[in-house]
Image 1 (cartoon, rainbow, N blue to C red):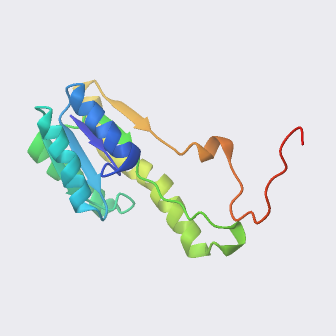
Image 2 (cartoon, one colour; image 1 turned 135 degrees about the vertical axis):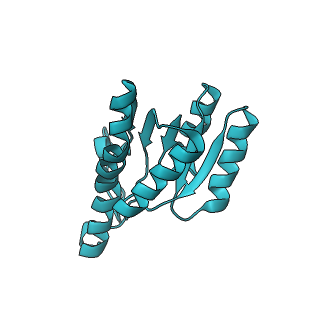
Length: 156
């Protein structure tokens, strides 16, 4: 049984569907997009696997605790966790507020800690589990945000 945070769209949705095609029942976590999460669950059910869409803010401990309890009640223990939830504020550094910066750290980092902490005990009891942490390619490559003039090309 797998849990994919931020599983209602994009890479998370693709991962959730791929896990179902590989034989896993899947819990699709979402924060605001219930229709999208339900659509992903529909695709998963179409593969013959079970699915549940579950709303939770994975950066809030109480939400995570409730989410994990509900998933375990409906689908069983979580054996595969894909920490995919993440946000960004793609603006110039000087235009990002401190509150926005705190939000990015809370959603992108604290959520990984909270959800992992909530499921790792069950994995240890069952003596099996996998935790997969996803991040943006921007973490590896970086990039210019808000550039007003084109970057010179190499060899020009």
